[in-house]
Image 1 (cartoon, rainbow, N blue to C red):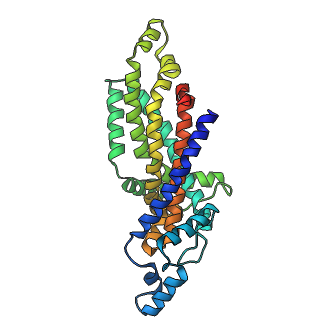
Image 2 (image 1 turned 90 degrees about the vertical axis):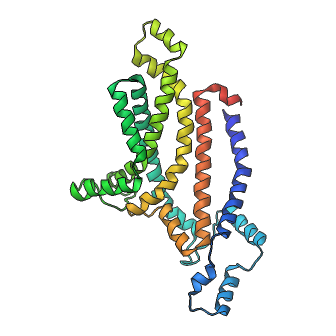
Image 3 (image 1 turned 180 degrees about the horizontal axis):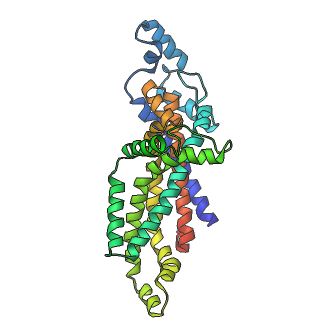
Length: 314
């Protein structure tokens, strides 16, 4: 297991380097001139050129990339073009909000999705299976922004069970944190839970038809015991794969959810930076989220090794 983790970590090094190239290159193709946006429409060409020189935008692209990469390796992601605030500090302030949202949503999606999928598979063809299948289809079809607005209207404004927006840090008030993150997490987790449920149902249905399950049934083992001890472990491999891929989706959807619930996370920070053409902030947000997703994929590989020992030697 240690050797497998070491190999995966070494493989991340060139991958992160490629990611930095892509992040830098994609930002360069964004239309518009940051210097002109900062100077304003009434600025003279001389003022615009002075701002470009001050920001180092006149330097060759390889020089700018090398300077940015050298600073990024040391933890310095630059300074915002508009607020003169450190990008690293801004991400440190916003990242806990996004990580809390994604973590709770992912945990909720895994628990609910795998439970629904396994329950539907064990009752395949019965009314329970049909109801759960329709429910997951609705969960996949409902737009998360519409679901978020619906939850706010009903649970926050009408019933007043939860706040309609804002974020309470866990260190200040754990109960307040849970209340502030509950509706956004449900909004974010619904589609992912539905996807995991469908995957678990298909995988579990396939496992329950294998010979070793028939053998256990012939020995007189209860169905619940077979599912819990044998089928669930064998059915979990494809579900783990899908769950790992869904993490990147959660970070993408979190941007919309943060705006709906007025959460000052990385997604909201990135949206503001795109409108302002704040290149250092955009680069920092994309790079940090990408590295987090890569680390989650590493954890998925480790999970493979825990579920199936044969993977450790590959």
